[in-house]
Length: 79
Image 1 (cartoon, rainbow, N blue to C red):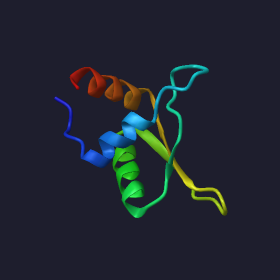
Image 2: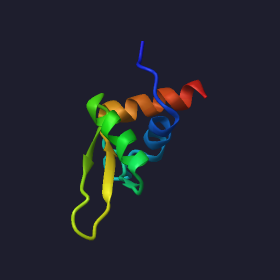
Image 3: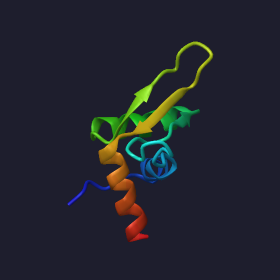
Image 4: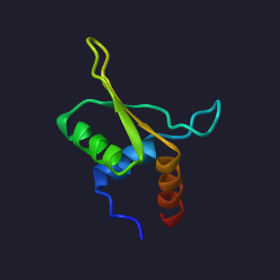
């Protein structure tokens, strides 16, 4: 059984859709608030994606990996 996700974590996984080139990587989700960073870091600790930045003027981003995209599919199917 999968670990329960918070609403913020679930929202972030749903926003990180499969990319249109490979379908194997999630599109980036911009991290704008401390709550966004907390949700993204929790997903990263669970092995569902990675966090980059912030770097200078560029925002931080969350990217789903294949495990994150699989969990996203499960969330969509259970809705």
